[in-house]
Amino acid sequence: MMDAHTASRKDDHLRINLEKGVKSSLTNGFEAYRFRHQALPEIDLAEVDTSLTVFGERLRSPLLISSMTGGTQKAAHFNQLLARAAQEFGLAIGVGSQRAALEDPSLEDTFRITRQEAPDALLFANLGAVQLNMGYGISECQRAVNMLAANALILHLNPLQEALQPEGDTQFHGLLKRIEEICRKLPVPVIAKEVGWGIGAAAAKQLLEAGVAAIDVAGAGGTSWSQVEMYRQKDPQRAQMVAHFQDWGIPTAQCLAEIKQEIPNACVFASGGLQNGIDLAKSLALGATLGGIAGPLLRAANEGYDQLAKTITLILEELRICMFATGKKTLTEFNQSVLTLIR
Image 1 (spheres, rainbow, N blue to C red):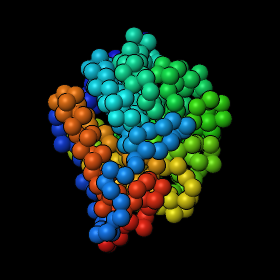
Image 2: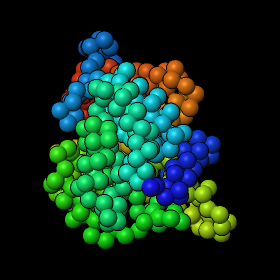
Image 3: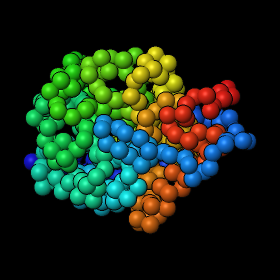
């Protein structure tokens, strides 16, 4: 059965993200780039095509509804709405950590609802990578994938969050070898993902050499999980210590630029502080295959499905306008040549 602390922690995370100011004090780094406006694009806006193929699945747009929640009954409602949107708009979607449902099968439905609502979506299962050092192995990874009929498995990396949690697991020694074993044995692709502090080029290279299919940099600039954990502390002095990490991490744009410079052919997803379609467009121009958005979509879903659908519609419209106003019809053409580094 699931440790009661796991369920309580999941509910805490959801509540704090919706009610508190938990943004990193760093920016996502995309403000350092401007698009090169093309006054004569020689294409029609209607010709812009944002479709692409990822892991053999065709998507209508490169927006990833980033991993957010699951594992409690409160979370099931959000997964239902987010998955419904993924299906309607032809997007990729990831769920939050499935550890709770592996420990307590009665919670599986809070995750299964995602596939039920999005039968055709590119869907990512999710487990904490550190659990591979805590007794998890290929069996648990396969169960997480099977729970959702998922197309890939995210193994998320969160050493700072684990260090700041009262109940955190900090045994990261030897983890790369265990990740490599999962990549070798699991029949679906494995994605390595941070949770908001970024993956630099050196770590990305190690992970890709271990067999990881894609890197989700999840850089700094969005939700700061140190701030989330600050609100969970019962000791005021420890809470103040945790707050000191608000400016920790590598900004998302920096992660992306570093990795693509060092490993040009790497499949990289960009999440971490993306707020709108212009951020999404900049991430794609810098080489990301998908751009992930979490917080803005969670807040929109909290107001109901209509608000969520409207938010996604505007994000995708902004992306299409960015491509049109730089004269690029397809994502293949939409590359770093459309950007100017201003500082």
